[in-house]
Image (cartoon, rainbow, N blue to C red):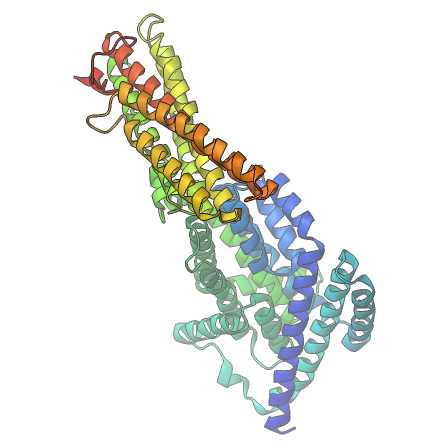
Length: 557
């Protein structure tokens, strides 16, 4: 057989099983989409269950990349913690070895055409009959299985001709340099195909067909295994911090397993071969290589398992976004809990900071300077701050006598509730703006004038700004409420005159109500925060002097 027919056969075989892998993976992913979500949500509570879930799901959908992308999405949605995601990634690397076993046990022990052609036929009938339903997706997956095995059959035939014209010595592993070179070739195969399963199927078929020796095949498998990190790296370019952390965890696991596999290559191959002979199992090169692939991934899990918590802690400190840094308390120090005066001062400073975040969100929403995604991230950060503040208040209550801060601490919790509601309203306003309809000029001008009054009231309610007073903040809120009534009357009159339809009228009035409530929540939070500072400082909160600003941190002086 000439080189051109051999090359054409290899190219066609690779194309067939790449197409088969794509159909199989997509079909199984769509068919098992809800099950995938349920398993990842419910069966990752413990370390072992997270590991086994990753292995099981990947072996079913035949794509560690698909599982990795799903894991990243669930981490970002808060359905999985970073620790759970890392353990699922470990399991995913073990689960991806199922492709090798499929090739080794089926590809070299059955009549592949007799298996592949009916699978393609039945699968396409299901696909056409099932349409977009689950039956259609399963049919697509079945047709993909058929194409996958048909591609292996074509490869086996082509590689048999290659074996006769390619001396084995030319592809032998003769030292560390050659082993590293084969590993890099395996990495390149996965990078080019964007599928480690397809690359490993090609390698096992080549080894099983005698085209390359088993030692070279083992190095190629190691490289293909490490090559899966390239897919994850491409997927997280410009992505979220959690996505980058999962990708780095994936890289750490695969780099570790690859290094261990290379360093212990002769020993692992010897152990696998001897073990299979002892059990009377198939000791063919493809089966040995599949077992080697599984063994060094399991060894990687064993090595990474004890350091998982450390890895998660390190990754949690990397790739931090401004929102994540914002979510870390700046003033709450447990060391000052034993001194209630200092602790309450720190509490006041942190609450003032929370108020500043809530006001910044409100101003960004009113000025249309931030989208809902950005506001959602800041609201989540503010929620974490409030959780930390609540825990600090509870600890402070336990460590101080009832009379010391009895009036101040409940006030602190109330401040947090007001600012949390303000942040929620800011996000709702931004969402309404994205979905809302434009207004005619008179109504648009009136809305902008009303929003300007709210922005002014927000600045007057800034406890952490010099010159602001409770009295000025209260006057700002009265002005907002007055303007709101005028705005409401104007919109209702426009509705009665037919200048604005009922649907948009209701939507804009609801948004205006949210804007008014935004000013109210900010003002109420600031008043309670000023009162908190007065109580802690031992001053009369009910009758503050003219233009006197009560600093929440005055207790430290």
